[in-house]
Amino acid sequence: MTVAPAQAPARTLRAGAIDPRYLIVFLITLVLVAGEARYRILGGYERLATTLGVCIAAELFLSWWLRGRMVNIASAYITGISLALLIKPQANILWPFALGAFLAIASKYVLVYRNRHLWNPSNFAIAFLLLAAPASVAVLSHQWGNDLRINLVIWAFGLLIAARARVLHVTLTYVACFIVLAMIRNLIVGGPLLAELAPITGPMYQLFVFFMVTDPRTTVSTRRGRIVVVATVALLEAVIRIAGDFQLSLLRPFYVSPPLLALAIVGPIAMWWDLRRTMDVAAAHDPDPPRRAR
Image (tube, rainbow, N blue to C red):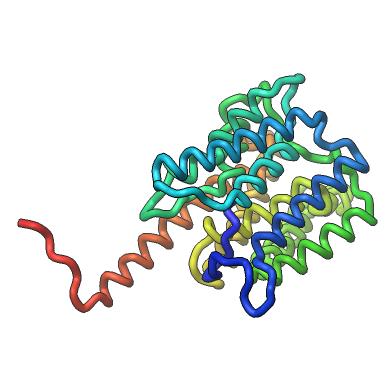
C-alpha cells in the first residue's frame, strides 16, 4: 500500500503532529503483533521475512533504477506485512509471498497513468495470485476469530488513525454499505443475520477498510468521489456474494475473495477516470497550453 496522505507534506513534522504514514505503520504493526501473539496468524516467520525482504528490496531498486532516487520504505513495509497476513497458500510454500511482494511493488512503477499507479499494490498482487493460481493461493478469512478485545483495540486505533489521515469517511462509508447490503442479502438468501455481519469484524476486513480502500495514492481526488467509489466496491462485492449463493458460473473466479476482487475491478477504473477528468479540467483552464512541435 502507498501511504502518502492526500495533500500532505512529505516531511514528518508539521506543527508538532505525527505524519499519518507513521501512524499507519504503527497500526499495521499492531495488527501483526496482536494476530501473531493471539492466533499465530502468520503461519511462520519465514513468510514475513520473504514478503518484507522482497518488498523493500524491490522498492529501493526500482525507485533508484527508474526514478533515480531512493524513497521512504514505509509503503513497502506496509505492503509486506499486508501480504504476509493476507496470503494463505494451500501448502507450505513461499513462492506466492515472493511473487506477490514483487508484483505489488512493480505495479507502482509499471501500471501507471499520468504518473500515478492505478491499483493499490497489495490489492493488485493478491487479486493476481487468486485469479492466476487459485489452486495454490487463498486469503485470510476467519483464522483470526472474532475476539472482542482485540477487535475493539484495532478498530479504536484504526478509526482514530483514519480520522487523522482524513480518510475516515471512506472507512465509514464502506462499513455502512457493507451492513446495509448484508441485511439485503440476508433477506434474499435467508440464514442468521449475524453470520452475514460477522466478517466485517475479522482481520481480512480490518486490513481492507484501513489499508486498501483508504490508500490516498489510489483513491480519487474528491471526497464525494471517494464515497461513490467505495460504495460501488461494496455493491459489487455484494453482487458477487449473491451470485455465489446461487452458484452462477460466470462469476465463479471471484468467489474466493469478493471484497478484494471487487476493489481490484472498481479501483483502477475510478482512478483512471479521475486522473483523466482532472487533467482535462486543468488543460481547459490553462491560458497558455503548450504548442505541438511542427
